[in-house]
Length: 225
Image 1 (cartoon, rainbow, N blue to C red):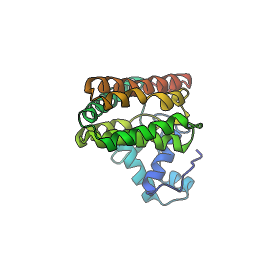
Image 2 (cartoon, helix red, strand yellow; image 1 turned 180 degrees about the vertical axis):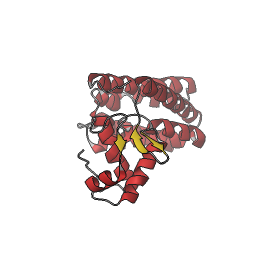
Image 3 (cartoon, rainbow, N blue to C red; image 1 turned 90 degrees about the vertical axis):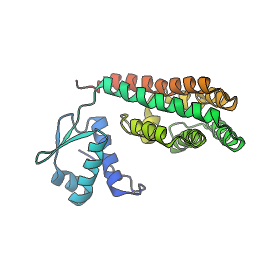
Image 4 (cartoon, one colour; image 1 turned 180 degrees about the horizontal axis):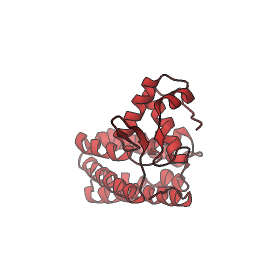
C-alpha cells in the first residue's frame, strides 16, 4: 500500500483517515482486509496513536469495522448503501434549500449569485477552486436556511459517500457540467421564495451527482457484494 498524506490538513488524524480512505476507494486495500496498526504506522512514518485515531474516525463513518480485541477491517461498500445515503443527503439538502427560499436575504442572494457566476466562468472544474466554490455556494444556502439539525443530517450523510464529495468528487466524469451549470435554477427558485421548487431542484441536483458517482464506480467494478 502506498499512502499519500497531504500536509496541508490541519488535524493529523483526519490526514491519515483521508489517506486510508483513498486506499480503500482505489482498491489499495480490499473489502474485508484487516488493517493492522503497526504496519500502517510504519508505512505512514507515524506513531501508532494517530493511526488508531484515524481508524476510529473511519469506523464512525462506516469505512472500517472495529471489533474489540480483533482490530480493524475494511467494511464492504454496497451499491444500495450508497443510494440510500444519497437519498438521505438529497432529502436534507432539498429541505435546506426550501428553508433558504423562505428566508431570502439580499446579502444571501448576492453571495449566491457571485459564487454561481464564478462557477460559470471557471475553466478548470477539476481544480481545488472548483470544490471550494461548490462548498461556498452550498454553505451559503445552509446559512440562509438556519436549520442546524437538518444540516447535521446532511453533513452526516455526505461523509458516508464514497470519494468524500468535498475532497475528491471533481474526479468523477460528468461532474464538471453539474458543478458549472447545475446551481442557477436552484438559486432562481430561492430568490423567488419558491420553497417547493427550490426543494425539488436541490434534491434532483444531489441525486444527479449520485448517478454520476454510481456510473463511475460501476465502470471500475468497485462493488464487492
